[in-house]
Image 1 (spheres, rainbow, N blue to C red):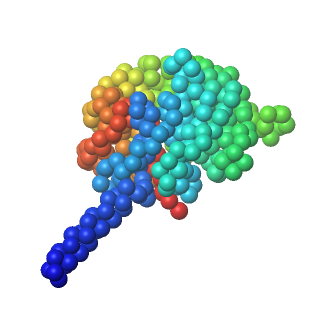
Image 2: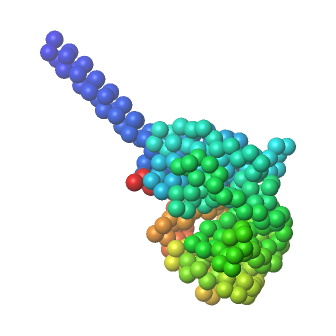
Length: 335
């Protein structure tokens, strides 16, 4: 009897241990890599150590970009819908700890939200279908600021201390919006710099001096001097449909994804020349660079995976299998 009880105890104990491991694996890690699966309408929560998806949460219709609250507990997702019959008009909110979707933010007449930035606890977004940018305050749960842009297809944005930058794809320009101290009633002065054809992905250099815009319709990069608001140089990198451009944290490299070929183009910023071209898939889209600059995550939308690139060797060190249409990504660090 004792042996039987011991055996049952061992079995139950082993089962209990196994269940504990499963429960722990299902929890949201910190840091967590968040990947939007556009075609599946899901947010995948990925362990960046094991490269495994630990959970999937409903992300609303046509999710494109994602940002994370400062405490790492909530994700905000733009529900775009710009190429369908109905333009999107919501931001989806996901509880990352509870791994569940919360009530969406209704944007009303602010249509086709896309580019997102979270700054000082507030969510800035483009509303492509309404030709504006706007801001949502999670504390008051209200849209507390809207600024008219009047450009065609304002897609992405970068928010700085006293400036906001936008890419206006079908207007072929970059917006530089500066806080106005001369008394303009809007509080902002708007300047638009004509660049190449179809600027979409772009980034501001870490030193704040340059803006690089990847022109999706002509395969070039426009290098804008921010102080003078002029294009100083144009690089032809021969992309078919550049999608995103990101600087490494040290400003040494610029990474450009090509949705047309699946390639990742790596450019030496100081030398202004391509140093590497990888082909980890057939439709490269979103790019996320680790804060320490050690690796980059590249979403291959057509292949259903995210490639992990070592930024020293420029080798693909892992492939994260996702759902359909991976694109926008973010890193969540719980505090």
